[in-house]
Each structure stands twice: as C-alpha cells, then as structure tokens.
Amino acid sequence: MGAVSQMAAALTHGMTPDRLAKISTSIPKVLIISAAEDVLIPYTEGENLKRHMPEAEYQCWEKGGHGVCGQYKERFNQLLEKVFKQGNEAVGRRAN
Image 1 (tube, rainbow, N blue to C red):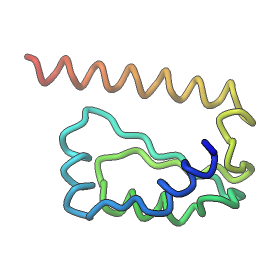
Image 2: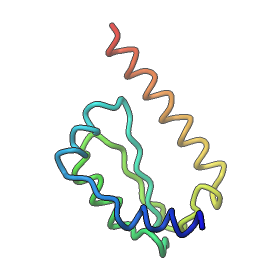
Image 3: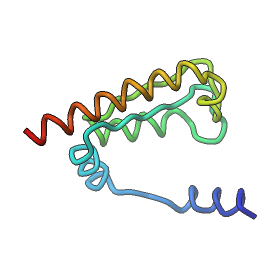
Image 4: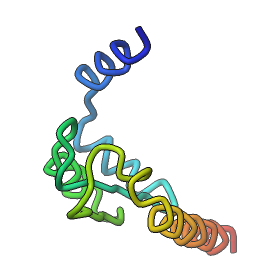
C-alpha cells in the first residue's frame, strides 16, 4: 500500500512556478539531480524545476536510473557533502 500511496502523491502533486521561485530564493542551497535513464521521472522534470529555480544547482547524470543515489553511492555522498557545506556557508553569510 505504501508504494501505491507514494505514486498517487507524486502523480497528484504540483507546484506553481511562482512557488518554486520563492523556494529557490529562500533556501540557502537547492540541489536537483536527474538521471537520464530514469523511467519513473524523466530528466526533463529536473530541467523544468531548474528553469523555475534558477539559483538551484542542477545535475543530470547520464548513466543512472531512478535509484541513482544507490547506483553511485560515493559520487552521490560526495555531492551531498559539498552541497551541505555550501548551504552552511550561505547560512553563515546571511547571519553576518
């Protein structure tokens, strides 16, 4: 039942371009990762997010599917560490 509920939520979820833009400017660091071989969420969805969230970092991994974080654990974890560091630095700059 959990998987069906998750799919239903994904299919019915939507966000306006204005709301995406607001999120993009209000969060210190946004990362969007797409995978070129993802059969559940096409990489074009990531491109669409990036179009409405210009401050976000966008990466499309060529050789990856829907579970790209498990396929490339080391690369994914290194990217997260970098993004966390950049986000913390941005928060520090805002506080000063």
